[in-house]
Length: 379
Image 1 (tube, rainbow, N blue to C red):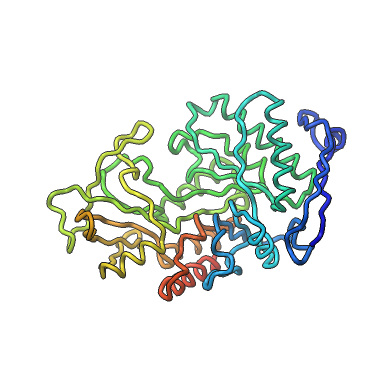
Image 2: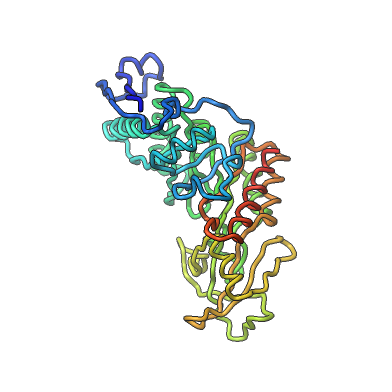
């Protein structure tokens, strides 16, 4: 075990590295931290560069599970714990932390956030951070936009001044144009970080057409979103396409719904941010759990002929309610991965890695298929 002496640079040192407007904490904090890994070098920040990011979320309980494919990832976001850090670094995979910044023009609060973020990253041997703020703003001119861009820019600059190998990313809506009221300055944000993780899922958060169950991440909307980021001035090398390793379970409320033959599942009208119908009528369910439901009920899985997305109906044995589940599998996501590779995007990756089932033989085989498909984005 190695004792790592980690230092935050004083503000004077930052002043030589950063634009004058970035004001950092005015003291030095020496952090005396024990490296938890048997090999002390595994506590170092990863410096390797990759041609294609395979970037996804969550893997705390899956680091050593059978079927968990380390070759199918370059960065794990929201990971934590010494075991994961040591294992991931041994596989040349980054682990980055969540960042929830204050949205304020109070520079003292911003300085405190930056200082605590750097301290946490160093103490826990992370390789960087990812920002994920998803609240609505009234318009592109909303002051919250300025606050968000300022804190993201200052935090990125501070982290890069400590170590340029720290990775900083930011979660973005599937389109830059006001999805769910998120009128953010994505051009400025993209310039401030290494890349945007474009969350091409939950695309039915606001349903403007027929209030029915449907796909969570249709490839046509993912392509439309990327094209709109391009139109806004953001190049593909700044965009990682995110897709779901989960689906939605909806209760079907139409009286004439036939579990054996019906395709159209009408759902309850649950409003979201001013729109009467949304996917909030359903519930998120992990890919592995969905596949277990298919096996338990011997459900017939069909595919939408236009979107190539699987769905099925079943009657729950406990509640006796009729449900329709829409989800994505290796086949439906292959189009996403092909698009990433063909268009030269920065990368691809799931929310979340740990939505597969690694506790059963069938689940492990299906997990292998999911990881194998993901790797084709980098072929």
